[in-house]
Length: 247
View 1 (cartoon, rainbow, N blue to C red):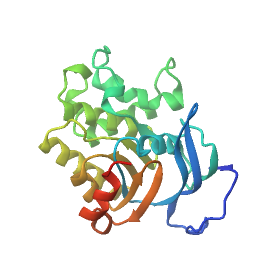
View 2: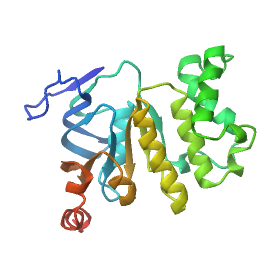
View 3: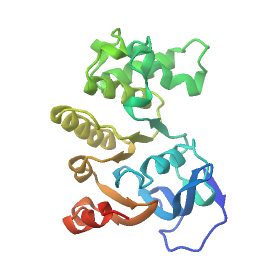
């Protein structure tokens, strides 16, 4: 999939590079009267876990929204090398605790893109849901209400919803925020396992431990890319001090 807006001549890996899953060139985006991303150029390599790191207002969630197709760019070029739409898992707070949904019903919502919300699930749909529940280790919680779960269990249910979409690109917004250390470690290990299973993962995070466990990192500040590379090289005290210093 390729979306083009006022293409600019920026130095990036070739669009024909077979290792690329996403190529972003000169991308600008935002909301009505409020620009957020400014001529951002970056790339995401296939079968990697990439962390988007930066303070509040740096553009992490907006960039995820553009990659997911829910926010329209205003300029630049975005190329997806995959054949299926990305699976997008929003922050846990975006899904109400009081919704009368079981864990299984929550994961089944991941099939709505294929089936629609009112049509009966097919055998393939049910298999995809069962596989996602098993993969996330929550099959025994399938009949529980979503609001009854711990933060870590609820996050795994939402990630299972993303996996049920059977995409090779999983986008997650702050998947470890608000979790205890054990749950954060479990989610970080899970993301590594998903990459090994053939999924490209991109996640926005404030959790520097989670970012350091990723394969690659995009460091953002005020809607611009500060640097891109391996977390060990990017997440240094001096670099982080620069990114988090007041504007």
